[in-house]
Image (cartoon, rainbow, N blue to C red; front, side):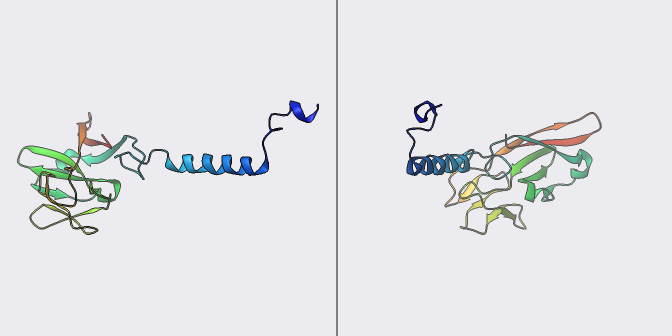
Amino acid sequence: MNEKNEPTAGLKRRDFLLLGAAAAACAGCQGMGGSGPGPHTGAVQTIDAGPALSYAADGVYSNFRALGFFIVRRGEKLEVLSSTCTHRRCKLNVDSDNSFYCHCHGSTFDPDGRVTDGPATRNLPVFRTLTDASGHLLVQAGV
């Protein structure tokens, strides 16, 4: 086979390196805009948060903060809010009044997840939940 029949015959070393660098950069950018749980994957994850009865008392349950959400009970309402600030994706902290505070840039959110002080401009996402046949709360993080 002569050199002209090779698929890379016209590709110079410099072009090959630039093409490889561009491919690596694109691979690193994949999924960066997502709002889902892991590192910007945008993927939906179903997480078993244990028995729903474990969240019977009013308040914020932060057991799953590291996985990306808080479980919030207010009366009959059980809700799951993202634990990630909508400004720059820092993990939020819970204040004593059940509001949320971002230690990175100072954004605050009320107990319903609405922005009360910026720089964040978007409210916290509310994740869908299901209760399975055994009474476990299933959280669809990233929805």
